[in-house]
Structure formats: C-alpha cells, structure tokens
Length: 177
Image 1 (cartoon, rainbow, N blue to C red):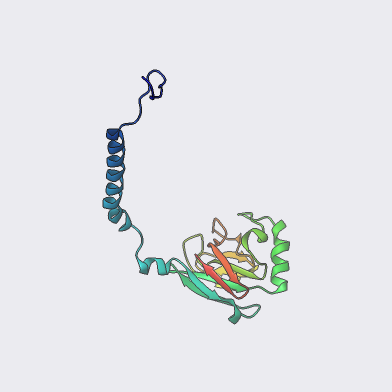
Image 2: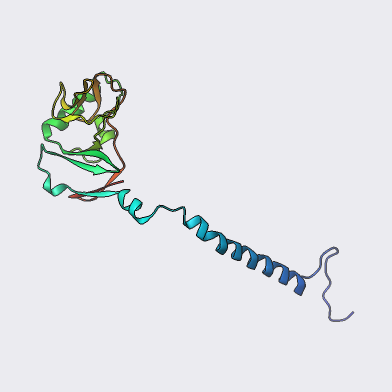
C-alpha cells in the first residue's frame, strides 16, 4: 500500500476511543477530588484555633534584667532579657553536672533573650523567677531549682524548662509558635 507508514509488529496507533477513555478517567478523577475536598477541608483548624497557635511579643518594652510572662496556648511562657552577668553565668554552668545536660547556646537564639515555657517539668507548677539557689527559677511546690538558662539544677524535676518554637521577626519582635 502506497502512502501508509509501516508500524513495528505488535503496536497500534491510538484511536479516538483511547482518547475518550483517558479523558473520561481524568474527568472522573478531578470530579472525585472536587467532591472530597470539602470533607478534607473541614478538618483544618478554625480561625480562632489558628489565632491561638502563635503570638507575637514586643521585646522593646523589656529592660535588661527583666522578665515578662506571656500566655500562649493556655500556658505561661517566660521571656527574659538577660544581663551580661546572667549570660556569663549560664555559659559557665554549661560545664556543671546537670541532670538534663544542655548547653546554653542550644537553648537560646540570641544570648540576651531567653524564651521558655513557664511550667515546671515535675508536676506542672509555675516556677518563681529570680529565686532559688542558682539565680534562675524556683518551683516552691516541690523544691526544683533552675539556673539562668532554665536548666534543672536541683530538685525532683526530671528535665529543663522546655523552649517553645519561636523566631525573631526583627530585633525587637518575636513570634512564639
């Protein structure tokens, strides 16, 4: 036959029917995704929950040596503007025998700012600031002492005060969460 291309044995050209089958399958997949999306989307957190998931703190109002307590997700967060002496003491304490060893540099993003959860890791009490044997925090309920980096030094608490996820937005503002 003149004018027809020869095909390798066992292959055929796609037909119009093949195109219609593929197009119908793609149309059905898009339709199924469109039908299921509202059910998946309704599982996303609502706007009021998202608003509680993070909070911003203005650091410009906190003088050196001062702490503020911020409520985040229903729990206190301590934000401390540490003095040079507190930073030096925290670095010196890196070599001390710590029940939960952690370097000060691993707990802070900028040495002058300490951000940590204000909940004792023993039974969930709220420690008092600038108290105790190590110049940090003291939990009067059962006698846990934390140092100037929030690390457990003495008492029944099993671990350091946790550091939440936070980021510096600029030099005077952080976002927790």
